Length: 117
Image (cartoon, rainbow, N blue to C red; front, side):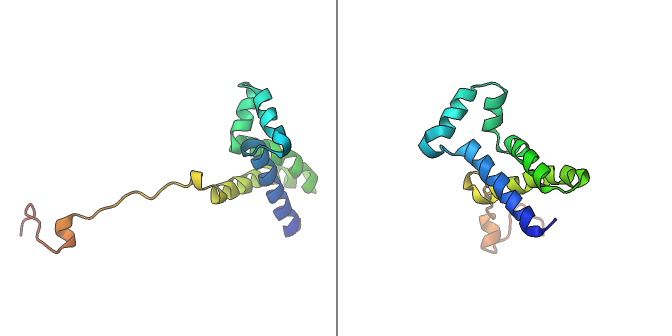
């Protein structure tokens, strides 16, 4: 498989999954699709980027792969690549750094009264 086909497949999976899961679409058509899906299986699927990316990746893996073995490996790979791209481009998914503060006595080079000398 050529690298450019893999990259095109990965970008296609990410774009289609992002469109279906997070965007309104032209003329709000995707919003209406998500609302009509309701709270059942399809509604929950459209709410989860990671779940939906597996479903979007399946037909693309079938089209891009040249053998059954390659298709089987492409399916989760395309989904994983789309998931990584989603995490890299969505600031809401980034985990903030843990707050860290030093003990003021240590910062000022003052001896700690509880420490034995």
